[in-house]
Amino acid sequence: MSASYTNVDLDNWERQQHFAFFKDFQQPYFNVCVSLRAEPLYDYCRAQQKSFFLAYLYLAHISAAEYWPMGLRIVDGRPVHCADPSISVVQLAQDDTFRFSYLPSAQGFSEYCEQHRQARTKALQQPLFSEGFAESEGRCDLIHVSVLPWLNFSAFSHATHEGNASGVPKLVFGQYDKGTGSMTLSLDVHHALMDGLHSGQFIGQLQQKFRDPQRYLSGDLAD
Image (cartoon, rainbow, N blue to C red):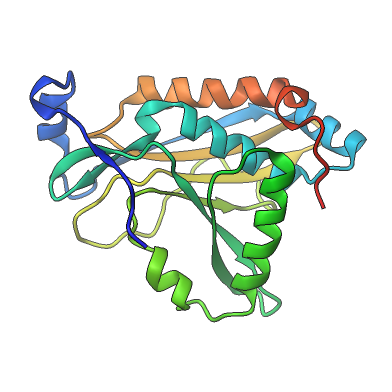
């Protein structure tokens, strides 16, 4: 499946020089780890019998779609923009290994939950190197999401390999701490495409949705 994107006008882009400076770094990604205030979202999901995991996944997905810099990628050495990114999220199998599942955008939370149910079932019925993996991994319009619900971490680094980086953002959600009402988020972005300012603005938009979950999740029931 090919990714859909539009070219960024590099000659008139305010990040032209920043793009040229960072795009060929051996390790061009930078990471921030932050503590999100998640108690309002957690309490809302408990009260409404919704999946907390799917709720924060959905809010991260729509936040990334809304925030323009999170759609920036690099294709053939030039900046492009993906307006409708999909999520690649890991699923834990019964043998304690993982699979990748793929979620497109949805019209609402209930539709998103159903898409996840189908994607999870499909992923767990197949090996890691499945047909879906071959079709989807490497697409520039993905956002990679992992979850570590067992750990309240303060730093994170991803396994990497040499090659041309497309700039796909990587999010990792940590354990929800019931004592503090917080959970850790690790965010990796490509420095040719985004700076710390942009990371902060994206996280700020996500945090705002965590504070007001009813606005984005009400009227839908997670399965």
